[in-house]
Image (tube, rainbow, N blue to C red; front, side, top):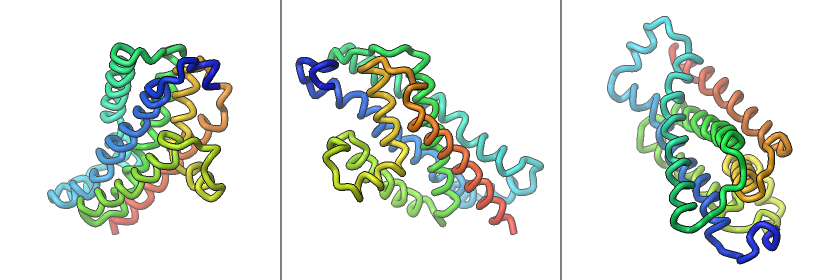
Length: 208
């Protein structure tokens, strides 16, 4: 693959798309991991509880604004990578946007789950770092996935960043249709649905 799609073997060609996954993981999870605990610490949680808004609606309301921020981040990173480091963008913008949207949604819902578990913002930050470090080390951003021990590969498969690194490198560098990467797309979509359900359920339990 390196000889076909990166004949000059420039590290920036692989690093820039992977960097998108790392930055989005850090920012998206951090944004929402403190969402519920911040409301609780400010005393706003009681007002949210008394409103007719359902738990799932509240969770969606927490993540939708950040999706646009995530898309803006991807645009800036890839644009700078293309202009400064001459990283090719071979795939279609729709394919790239669809893959990015799925990953942003998965990362934001993971942050919401953390937010329903953490007791304060310090705990939410610590738990975010606990997710971020494996995402950097095991997603394929720093080390080749195939070269990792089998146990590490199993752990990597549970991380949204691993699937997004495959998707964005496939779309950006090889012009792969995301429909041809069904496993990664399906996994991110399933992760988002399950994450929203878990976050909504845990928040509902905290009303008692």
